[in-house]
Length: 360
Image (cartoon, rainbow, N blue to C red):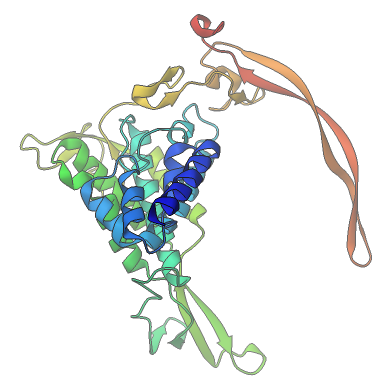
């Protein structure tokens, strides 16, 4: 029975690998083995890039790994959204054969963002899973009980406050485990950016309340703490990426200082990096670049998504496409909206490949 179950599980895993980028598929399939420790061990041992401590957590908390799978999908989508108009747009991560946590390749400020947003994604996913009752090891925040007071007066804690403390604790144990095995400069940098990501999620924890009383008079309030939409964390970390600080290692290798003395010392919320970014114009796996050949560019823009900048001066091709859109929509009382189908013809501009690879 065990061999048959294992065969069926591996067949499903192979099917999933056909339709999903390999690293993400590993995370999406976490927890699928249910209560079987043997299958959990097989699964956890085959996730790329995990260190022994991470594999232990994987085997011990399979339901948490399933939540992390959702977190991986969310933070990679958020990364792609934030970099959608830039030469490097996170696609290299999505199609990577390596681990999405602590993978090698990036060595610049893009790396700082990746470590921060992935750490934040784990916090968000685990905290949400706690509140939704999906994890055996946690629940709603147990400290939010009884009565309290804020600027608007007294209120009672109720509902389900997001257990951000457990989410941060689990994320720190899981994500930081890989860096704690090394004592080099890169490990210190990654630990710093991991922490900045965790702090970013907590920054947007907000108190929500519901009023009780005659006509909503708010004679009694029930409140709880809730995380904001993950987009707020992404937007905040994007600003931190734009202002990321380049640092150098101390002589005693116990920390780092700013590379340019004109800049302020980084706080625990700032992103830091060692090396300048490459131009990402051509495919280079060593720096995590897929190049910009075939990328859609904006001919009328003067920003990073312009054809001149996106295509690195190589020029672009233009193709005309047609698509059907809903148009001339009208509201009819009551209660429907009727639209017509309109054919839209538009030009799409894509970057040319480098001359040496144009014919391949």
